[in-house]
Amino acid sequence: MGPFNKPSPISSVKTVDFGPFLDGSDKQGVANAILDSFKSIGFVYLVNHGLDEAKIASMFEWSKKLFSQPMDIKQLAPHPVSGAHHRGYSAPGREKVIQFDDGDSEGSMPVGKLAEVPRDIKESFEVGREDDNEMPNIWYPDGILPGFKEACLDFYWTCHEVEKDILRALAVGFDLPENYLVPSHSRADNQLRLLHYPSVPTNVLKDANASRIPSHSDFCTLTMLIQDDVGGLEVEDPNRPGSFIPVPPVPGSLVVNAGDFLMRWSNDIIKSTIHRVRTPASLESGDDAMVPSRYSIPYFCGANMDVVVDSIPGTWSESRPKKHLPISAREYIMERLAANY
Ligand SMILES: O=C(O)CCC(=O)C(=O)O
Ligand SMILES: [Fe+2]
Image (tube, rainbow, N blue to C red; front, side):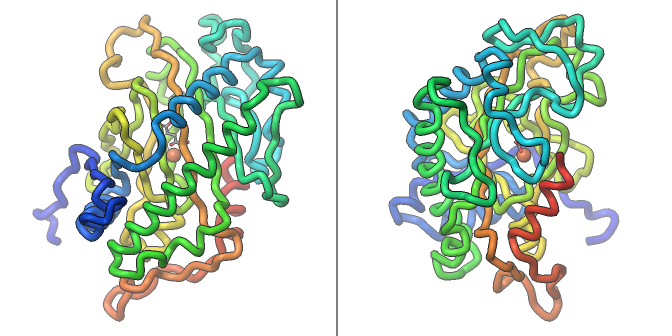
């Protein structure tokens, strides 16, 4: 490609109907569409994805219930100080101490304190599989939010089923046996994250240093994200570094994106793209307006910790040699987690 032949900008993330993969009527067509999207921008919307709508609604209800608790209750299952143990509740902007209006069930922040707002204006609750002894879950004491733990774990395993279907589609896209990627994800070394971005005045998010979630890529195999109807998620156009395109809510969809681990695994053929959450485009005028509170639920899917990955067959050749050395998932994730917190 010469200098006058730049790749064209990408204007939106494609929507793929997952139904024909799930019912077997057009597995290859769906698989190709997903893989194409992963190659070009690393993101795709899936509709008819098979994740139970009632369970999604119920998980959002639990998330709202959790985040509307007073701070001293939420802090009863605190995320450990070590970033390597990624479980439990993280208060908004935990790197910097700020004061919150605990009594407000919407979780909005008192305007007087906004000068001290940290980079990350969000709070989160992280869940792993319950039998993970290396990184045990951190739950609330008995009597606090009864039913929450069961709901999270049920949702965790429900998402794992959809994860396996997406992994099957990716394998088919690579012309590999359908179950090529599933066994290396059999342990469900995943992470369910409940996210709440509190309501803040618009001008707060205009500050270059503040955002709901700053630009980052995910470091797992893939992420399945459910967002509410507020919007604000944006992904960088790989053909136009620095230019972001909105990933607005599409009712009934899952946003699926590739992580750095899958990018490495695919010898960089699949893209793990930088994304962020800011003020939804529709609200960009009017500094005094409050950006509404936003809830989202990402489910990060990781390979079994003991799996050592090397470039997927078909992603390398003599003319496109392997770009990375083999690495175990444990080694990779631990490195990344420790660097992040
Ligand atoms: O809240 C969102 O829409 C995105 C969250 C995200 O990118 C993340 O948690 O890694
Ligand atoms: Fe992300």
